[in-house]
Every structure is written in structure tokens, then in C-alpha cells.
Image (cartoon, rainbow, N blue to C red; front, side, top):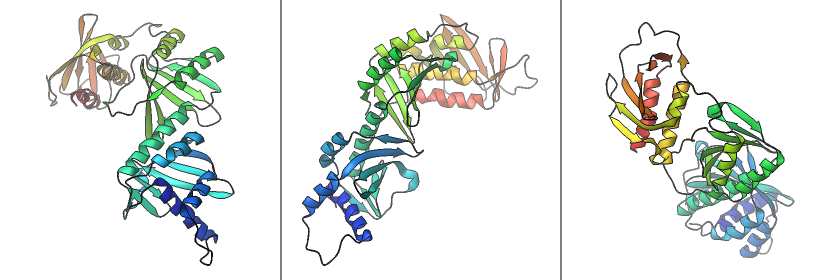
Amino acid sequence: MVSSLRAYLFIVMIASMVISGCAQSDKAPVDLSDRIEKELDAVEKVTVMSTDGQEVMLDLPTFKQELPGQGNDLQLSETALQQEDVRFTLVLYRKKSAPLVVAVGEGASQFGENTYRGAGAVAFYHWIQKLTGKGLLSQKMNTVLLSAEDLARTRVLGEPEMEAIRKALATAVPETAASQKQYPLYPNYRLRINSAEKPLEVTVLTPTLISVPFGKETHAFHVDSGLFSKLTGWIPPTDQEENELEQLFKASKIRIARTGAMAVENLEWEVRKTTVEQGVAHQTVRLLQTAEGLKSAPKDPGPEQYRLFVTVNGKEREVIFYAAHFQLDAKWFAHNEIAEAQWKLLQSLRK
């Protein structure tokens, strides 16, 4: 058992000194607490690197201030942290010394040859994740490209608009509670923020929730609804003609009927009940949009699988699924295994 993060960081520091010949047996014993403080005082920069190579600077004063509260309930583990379980890497840059590198997983951290587990390792992961999220949103903006994916429209934002984005992100609050997956609402606004580092991709999930990918991690933040209002002004969500599929984004109710060979359950839900239901409904339409429109009916679509009914403006629209096709009203579309993909998406609402 190791009682604190400072203690096991010191283990790594001592190991590095032994290797470099700095620790010698004929020297007088040192005061460990004093040495720990001196070594940590030498840290001049702390970053977190994602599994795909993106590096984010952490706020050093915050890191040093909160560090003493980390690392309780740690246990030295005989089982090493596997590479596939690493979520990100913490790098502590020190003056005139090699950096300290810490591989961090959701339930374990590895320092040199030692792996630590326990409640403290889980808490450490969440702490570094929180600091990483703040670091992501505080990166300098050089340019910002706004896109509305469902409308196939983009716009380069000017400096006044970028300043509004900066202010909104500066007050963002990390989402820490586990929740049901949220798909982006129509028209699927995204911000591509270019800086000196790797571009930052921000997805606007709902009027008050955004997400930012970081390697294997996805950070979610609550933002003021004023941001969404500005986005709708910059790219209005109804600024185009709608085709057969785009009209389904306005669905108020969706139901599934088991009418064919596929073993689905009869389901029905109000789309606008929560943003989760809305997001799934909008994602359903996006999946339908990946299909290829056909000029005529296929010669042999195979047996019917099931039917999806979408209520738009009080009128129920019917989608009939086949193994590799579907029919909306009188029009046919081709898509491999779309019936299975749609059912997997829709049944997520039962969880």
C-alpha cells in the first residue's frame, strides 16, 4: 500500500536517480519529505497526451495545488497496466531532468515498472481527466469553422464570433455523471477550432451540452444555451429545401411494428420527451440518409423485416425495412444491413 501520490511519484524519481548514478550508497540518508517537495518544485510543465498523439497543457498551479489530495487508497499491483487499457499519458517536465511519464487507465496507473490500483487510482484518473478537459477548452483559437452537418453547410467565423465562442467555452462545466448516450440534435452543429496544436473538434449535442473527443476519451461539458442561439443565427436550421428524408427530422413520435421476419419488439415513444429521445430520432434519420436512392424498385428485396412509423406534422410516415433495402412512401433505397443497424440504434432507448 502506498499512502499518497507524492510518495509513489518519488519512487519513480529515486529510480531515475539510481539509473543515472545520482543516488549513491555512501551518501548520508536524505529526508524523504524534503526531497519530495524539491523534486515536485522542479516540475515546470505538465501535459496530458492522448492515445492518438494529441498533447494538452494542464494548468500547473492547479495541478500542484490539488496534487496533495490525490493518491490515497493505492495498492501496488502484480498485474501490469496493459497498453490497450491506457486512456492517456501524464507527462511531468522537470528542470534539468528527464520528464516523469505516467500511463493512466480508468482503474490503474503505471509509473516505471510499478502499477498501482485501488480507489485512489480511479480517483486519480477522474482528476486528470477533469484537468484535461479544462486544458482542451482553454487552447488558443486561431480560426474556427462552424458546420451544420445535417444541412451540409459551413461558415468561417470572424473575430467577434470567435470571441463569443471563447466566452462560452470559458464558462463550460464538465459533465461527470454517467448518462445515456446523447446523439447530436438537428442540425448537428460542429466547431473545428484550429490552434498551434491539433485541431479541436467540438460537437454541440444539445443546446446546453457539448462534447470534445480526446483519443479514447470523450469529454462532455455543460454550456450556456446562449451559445446554441448564436449558432442558429450564424447558420439557421431551416435555411434549405427539405427532401423526403430530411422532413423526418421534424418527427414528434416514432413507433416500431413487428410485421416481418426480424425479431424486433413493438416500441413507441414521444420524440420530444427528452433530448436523448430526440437525439436517437435524429440519428435514425442520419442513418437512413446514408442509403442510396433508387430510380425503381429492386427486383428481389427479399422478405420484409419490420416497419418504422414516423409522425411528422400529425401525419404518420411509413418506412418498410428489408435486409438491404427500405421503402419510404413510394420511393426505394439501398443500404447493406440497414434493418439490423436501425434496430440496434432504436432499441438503445430501452436501456
